[in-house]
Image 1 (cartoon, helix red, strand yellow):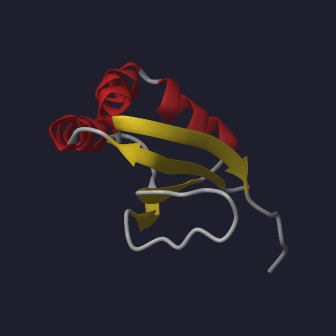
Image 2 (cartoon, one colour):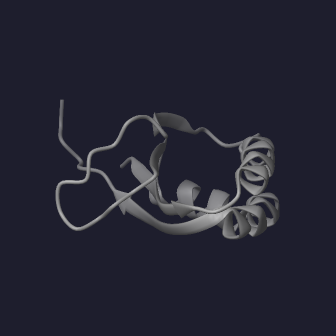
Length: 99
């Protein structure tokens, strides 16, 4: 069953750190099957979440999403993300709908 990592940037504080994070996170993606579904396009807050950006990444399953997030390479990138801004991040499973 697919899984999705959802990033919500509530406030971006440093474009320099964000650019560094983006570079490191891309490198951390090597070896993982990741499909970007949304990446910092225009977002409209409908209920109580003001955002400066949203990214949604699709993984084949929850285990792969967690393995990527917990990898040493992504954790190194995360240090830059933490300096870049105020984020909410979650992983959720998709639906198992027979075709």
